[in-house]
Length: 166
Image 1 (cartoon, helix red, strand yellow):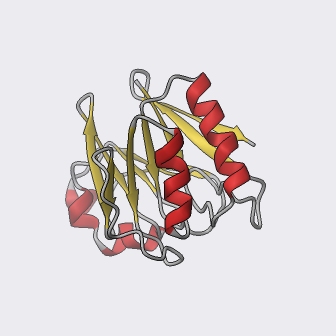
Image 2 (cartoon, rainbow, N blue to C red):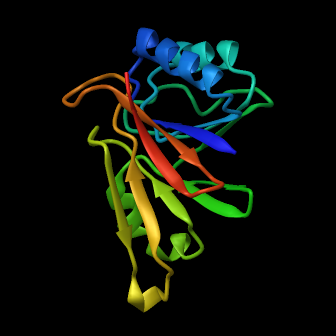
């Protein structure tokens, strides 16, 4: 199974449409957002053009997204967690929320974050919590602010993350 990971769309509908076209071509059934989608019309664009499951955590630029009522959408206030194919996938908006809540991530296989718009991946091991090595990854930003527009596709079968440039 492959999932798309987006962040920091900031109401850029034309770039969201690009992402959704790639998602369709890649036959992706799940999209995770690390926040800063923008306003409800942005999430409506995704809901109306994507039939799979959509998960998001709220970012500092999200307005009115905490009351979305759709069976395929789950909005997490701060820390998102889904389990797919035996993997615990966490997502937050700000990287510092990971380090401020380390105990919550002790069973993580991968953690995604956004906010700073810079695509990044690292492996960490935190000895005092006896965690296994886990990936922490930022898919960049769909809006193309500060850095070029990107998102990621995560393949759960081979644990590979691929950055997609828009």
